[in-house]
Length: 105
Image (cartoon, rainbow, N blue to C red; front, side, top):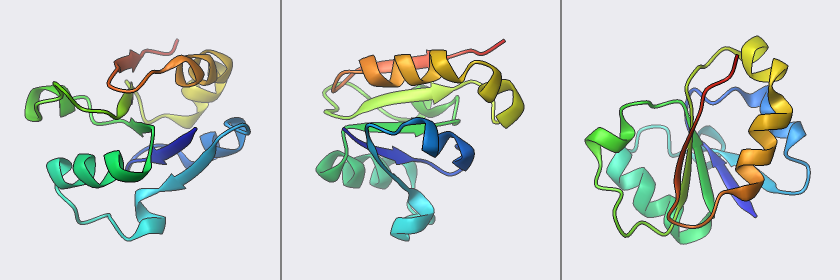
């Protein structure tokens, strides 16, 4: 599965997603795209977007999106790392068009 990390997604999560190809918005030069533009571009090449933007579902119409979207409800790497197995499991199970939120302890 091809995964895109949005701005704010902790980069140390990347090595835990070993069975996937992971790229960041920064690596692709997409840091200045609006959320709508980012979603449209990401759909063309990626299966899942991982973001920390908790307002995304209120700001964008996610109906009929082909991209799976996983929202981390925190940007804190220590908190995410403590529950990294849960995060990886949810990312692995995310299907195209699905929206999921992950709250870690």
